[in-house]
Image (cartoon, rainbow, N blue to C red; front, side):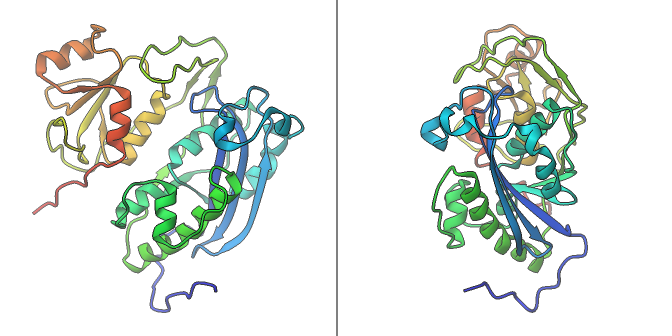
Length: 325
């Protein structure tokens, strides 16, 4: 039975006029990984489904974790290359806000594919449903898609299948959007910055912990990260969660692309600092004995240091900023 539309809701005029709920499956998480399938559910301003689309994509390489997405080399061999589906993909994104679960990841993968094809994606803003669930203070046990779906009674049929993941997210996004409109909640919209240059020269392999990716090139983009709108609550304390407004600095190589980590931190409400000072709340590095200037300063200031894996865990549950009196 279709969900009844709340008659008393006054739709905020500042809300977007349409959304593209997106899910992509990929060969992995590194900057040289490729999209192997993509799905888009187009929604109108109130979250109603207009249509949907799905495609496989030939990554021209090993498909990666088949045990997760189920797409083998044989299945993908006859699929179109990304440049061959880029026009259709663009038509479904055009003029809409890109919506995804952990949207910065989907956006980065999409932006790289467009850059490889020497094309520009028609996306100006994105909305992460993890960030929206935090804005709505939904009582979720964690920020997995399955938890968001269960909260709204949406049944998952094929996890890690792009079309079904996009459907599940679209069905969970609709009541989230309506709740936000009802309470006049500001939507957590973020700018999508296309990648501006691809350097084909080999990049150095990361030396950090965890999965060791070996990128085939360096992505560079024009970036000016916004400051956190929240006051700095001080230093991170081991065993406690991060809090919005904390100043985080990075040093050295990371297994996950640095820009992805920075964007995740910004979307969580943290302030990404380009240098380290006595005000820095936390330094993230996979090599605390490297002797870089940031590591040396952190040790002299007594700034807490964590590795990339620990920081990724901390990002899953960042405490909201303390209410101002």
